[in-house]
Image (cartoon, rainbow, N blue to C red; front, side, top):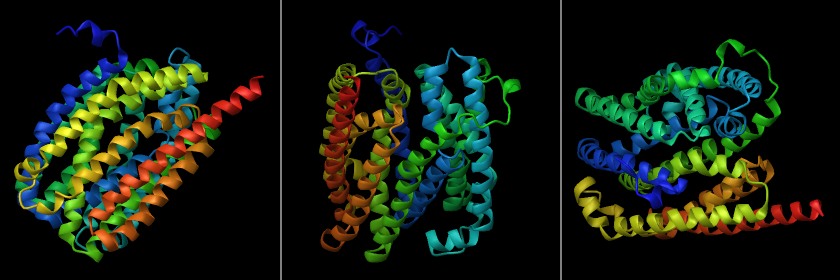
Length: 429
């Protein structure tokens, strides 16, 4: 089907519109799956699923030592420079081997401790031992995904996302009906393996064009450059998910496990619609910002992104808010405690989107100090405000903390980027 001219002439809209098709299908399928899980495993089971998803997200960082955004950046820059790409992938390979071995060892030998710490039970040792085996697949999956993103191959990205999601969903349903909650958790753990198989099938031939496996060697030429991304990924991915794990435990301890399930459900809804932005960030924003070298071009590009996606995103969020009771009734029956959480979560996510567009400049230009400072402010605010607000507002305090956090984060990011360009102008004079 041919796209309308106003879409085909705008890369942001092309990626967004194609993403919209994939995400719409995902949302429809997800609605049925989430209802099935809510009815079958209940609030407590939902909270446990949230813990496993957070651990898996942490592994996407540790398994490659956080090199995903670095690979995206350098593939975008060197896609026509094979010798440099070989140097990048040689270093990435060593990082992935080190990250995978360390992650697998911690998971396997620390399975008993992790089960007790995250679930207050020894019944989940099996999942950490399984994840220990899966870690290398997670690492390879992340590296190949980064190549797809660095090439801005949004058509195949959409195909990979859709096929892998549908297959992972099928595995989840089979797991649910076979072993109930345990089967669901195993299926979630196996999702990266499924995605890797889809990646190999859809993108395998193209990958060989850019990654010359015979030319890879054990060198660390890009070590220092990639270590910067390791630090940034540790903060943005590992620490974020670690804090979410702790906040979910806090809600369960301070209030009850059902409330932890409500918060997990609202964050899952949030992550579903934020997938719209995730694809745009990796396929367009990061590679584009990497190629921009002056303040005027940056401002023009940011304005172009804002005017394209913020209205679409805002409209979608309004629909989610106005139909929140139907969403609860249809997808999460008996999760009535979710209703007050929608307003603050949606407001926070809208501001978050605007801030994340800007903050991708830190990744594009490898502004490690700026990234670290802004992320630590954001995460510290979220954790501290959550602990304070939960005493006064209960679970709603967590999403209020989410909202306040991103207001402050947005302001700080604007100040830091303005300072960066003003300093660059002064140095060029």
